[in-house]
Amino acid sequence: MLLRVVTAGLLGGLSIVTATAQGVILQTGGAGQAWPRYGCGYTATWTLNFHTVTVSNPDGTRRWSMPLNIPNVRSSVIRDAAICPGGDLVLATTLTSADGQVVAANVRVDANGKVTDVVRTSPYAAKALACTPSGAVWSAGTERDSTSREKAEYTVIRRYNAAGVQDAERLHRSEAGSHPWGPADRAFLRADDDGFVLLSTRIQKIFLAQAPDFQVRQTTFVPPAGCGEVTGVALLKDVITVSCANSSSSGPGGETTFSLVTLDRVSGAFVKPPAPIAGPVALLGEDSGQAVLFRTRGREIVKFAP
Image (tube, rainbow, N blue to C red; front, side):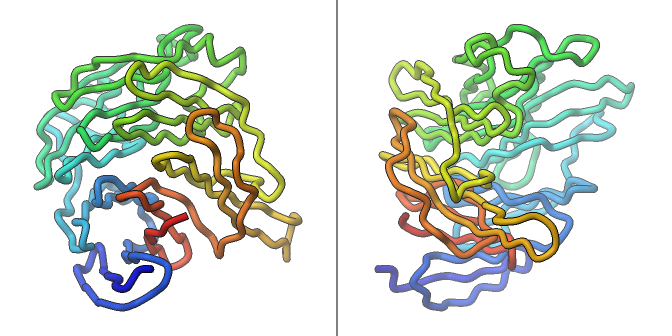
């Protein structure tokens, strides 16, 4: 049973102690911001128009907030972010240089908001990132040719060490099947030191790997009744928890309900039926054995034991 909860304004720095049965609640920023990313106790978000990035401490106080400034870069697009131990941030970006060159790159920002490394990954472009407690960064992405068509073959999942050097790659594109969309499209990537999970709602597959070899196993992901659309994923010690939205009818007056479903971490098989939960909600990840849930109405982050 939780006895103490901290409620804090991520952007304003206001902190209030309160009590609730649900878990730790952190108030996030307002409209015009990306959905928050969560990792190692820290929270990050960014404005959609000008890419002002904000990182908050585990207690909810703001750590830093500033535009993404990279020397000799005219503009940037942030596709995803992963938070590493100590509050370092890794961003999956598309950068346009001062001379008009467009490249995909992983950008590392330190705990004080300073860009410390820009690692070009083109033609591979990460679409989803996940940082482990030991600091390794897993990515799921695509490769395209000079005409912007997806290549027939490339490795979808790659791992980078703390220096930004790629040290592992998994899952050839052909292994995922012949679907015209790749596994990284509309996908959720979560990782810890014991493995990773990539759930692609576009191709309805889930890819799982466990240490020490991280060999990928895949299985078809067909959401059960009550789980019409996946909104988020949490990778826990023994299970994978998925948050879902289900529209009972279309058009005005249609009701959308939300639920959590549980899968076995090794096999990907469903082990618990959908459990209703007040929504709208999206799972962001895990923290100390607890699932981290984002309530979109009110923009709250809640930690709880599933």
